[in-house]
Length: 112
Length: 113
Image (cartoon, rainbow over all chains, first blue to last red; front, top):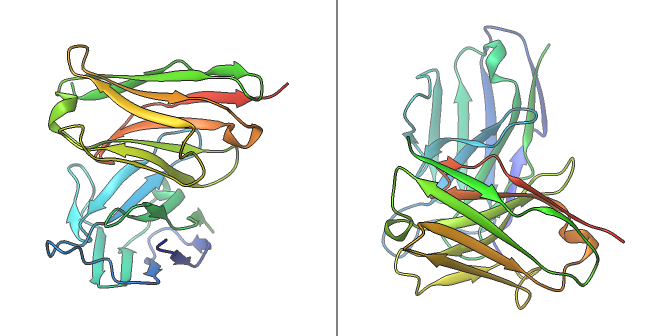
């Protein structure tokens, strides 16, 4: 199974400051078709997850452009240029390149 | 509006069965990969099962293989998860998701005597 490791697991951030979450897999996520099936999800307390990015860096509709996704192979990053109050919650990376699909442990972002 | 709505959750004894349904609207389930993801209380997200557009490819987490079955009724535009031989560790909110883009509100399954 592909192991997804996120860091940090806890991320206190001051409003207006940047934030960055790392996601590393223990093997390459490049599919034989050339695509990299790495997504980022955000889950607020008591809510369903919301997808932010698919295939590493493709932003979903409605996601503010202060969010960015980057990376390749086995090393990926989610960045927020200026954190806002609505960004609190848990961020997950997930690979669906190969079965079983696997999630990172989650990174809890809170406002300092 | 594109959405999925889960139903069928509830309290069941260990060893029992439940069938979750995921009714889709605004799109056709047979045109997309459909998935089940679960989340135990206070825990992270865990992939459970997926089915491809044609219904030919079905994948399961090792923890549910042989006990859970994913299926689809194209006429009803609905995805299912048949859960047999349930265990206390299967207790979780079960989310239906289209391509991990569209998520339902989840269905709570509690396995307890």
